[in-house]
Image (cartoon, rainbow over all chains, first blue to last red; front, side, top):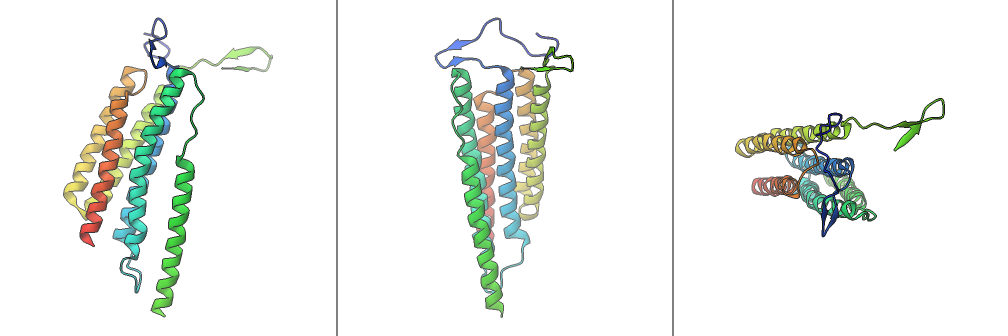
Length: 132
Length: 100
């Protein structure tokens, strides 16, 4: 056991068919990235639920809140699954000393949230027109 | 990794286990996020909300066990976190659709 780090350092690199154990700092960094995406998932789920439960109904469009909130909740679930898949792929790349595969999540998240924002704006305008 | 100090000599970047501490903090933040979501769901369904808040303790324990091992989490533990979040999403969706 190393006193400075409190981490058990293996006597030699653990060899397996899937490469060798990477520096523990890279493993922890990968894990923290996964957890950050997990918190993003939870925030999306909570945001979707809040839209449905806390917002007043759009005048003339009773299903408006569900139209915005449901994709947010689904996106939260999708981000959780994809982040785990990417964590595994990154860990494998670290073990093999290969370049990390590019992440799909930033683009997916940006595109989906932009689409939902446009939808929310359209719903708000439509309900304003309807109430007038 | 190394850096140079004012005299131009290379200084060892001694890692004193801060990566592990940062990871512990990340698990703590994740636990708090779970508990917060459980609190929000309490308004919709007290039972489900309480279950999620209890699950946040499970998440915290998973994190504690993983970083006490010293070398990061096994896939099973992180898979369990993913399954918990995904199940939470599906249950939340079901609750909102049932209310509708």
